[in-house]
Image (cartoon, rainbow, N blue to C red; front, side, top):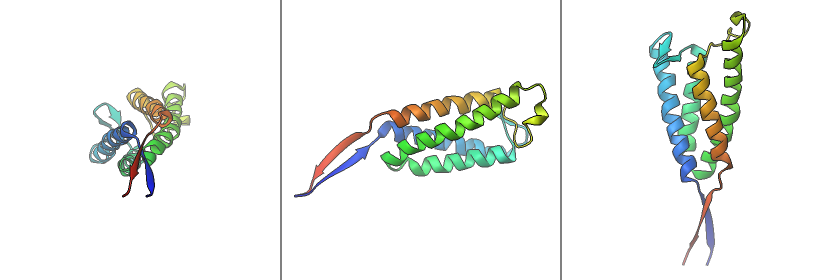
Length: 134
């Protein structure tokens, strides 16, 4: 008899699915509009980043361990974008940091909240299930 232990992370998988759907919709929808989409800034680099995060999160939602890892990836990636956005929104000379993309306060809030949630999801313990083969 062999035992197999599988890691389950339903919260992490739900998080990855939600992040994937939201960011993919914002990324693809941003290419269809110019300027703003639902209060969020659209730009080529920002749309590409959101689309990539959305696709990665949707792929990671299939398995518990990879869904937890995407939480860490989202944390570091979106934390960097949030810091960039805060510099962009708070600087006296916006041309210094807005050359690549120009996130607004709504973008900063979205990216910051999702980054913190990504870290929380990564740090949550995964459930394990042991199955027996007969």
